[in-house]
Length: 72
Image (cartoon, rainbow, N blue to C red; front, top):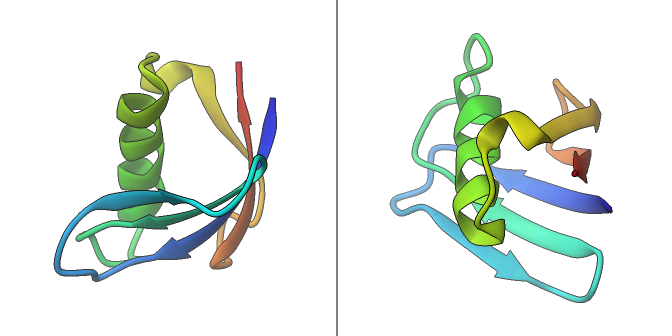
């Protein structure tokens, strides 16, 4: 399943908000430095979808706020 994520790094709290079937807003506390925010986004989505973080892959948008993520 492919989803579209708008990332919000440096947030006060971690949150996954579902906009519609394929669009999500993910807020994480980590800064966007050296992939820390991307790892936090993967972990937050793993908890949200109740799966392992290794099953979540960033397809595009690694250095952008708008990401396409595959959840297998």
